[in-house]
Image (tube, rainbow, N blue to C red; front, side, top):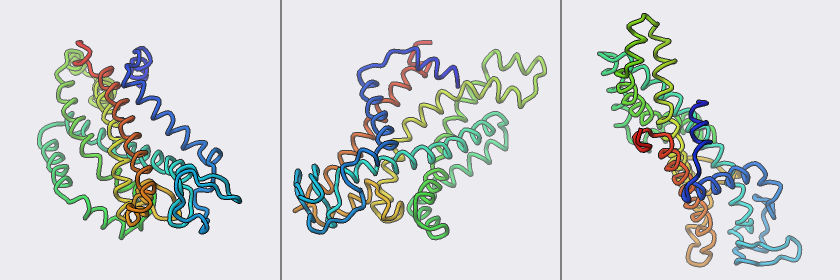
Length: 286
């Protein structure tokens, strides 16, 4: 991992990479300090200011810069609060999926043979299960909420990591120093973790960075459908669901959460693309 960070630190950010880093850094900062800088309480009702337009000023509560929703809650404050949920869900879900997938692919690719075939067929079987069916099943067992959402996204997203890692392991096994380590009698466990795992971590890190954006979209989609985070927690998906019935008269209820999702996902993709350019030896010309 230190080699990965050294490569990232030693390369100058491109224009797209800079934009991505700024967006991602801003989202993380808002997730940390959001409650202290929000102009209003994200869940506080103000029925006198229901469906208030942009810039509406209430004598008692101040200005609602991005308007309010059907309960008079401040849209700007709710967007800031939604950053925390998106960061928590995406980080933990990607960590779970990446840990499972990398370990699974490492074992399958290194051991090979019939075990590799069985493990890959299991992965194929999981891919064949409709995502929405799996979501409903897990939600029915453990209940809807942030923990459920993390578990769903973590335990359904590992197959991609497993496939990528397995392919990288099959290539790494043919490298000269890996073959030499085998010839001199090093243990399989040492070869797997000391020589092969570092070679596949770059691809896993890049994939994890790119999957953060996918996870944010999945979290918003499931919350929109009522299968993810539940009120009074605030997420961008719930904000979209709240505003869909009033999109004609109170367009700001859906427009600004949608813009927030778009900007954050694009920022993650931009940063992930830059990391891929830096960490992929084929793109570096090595």
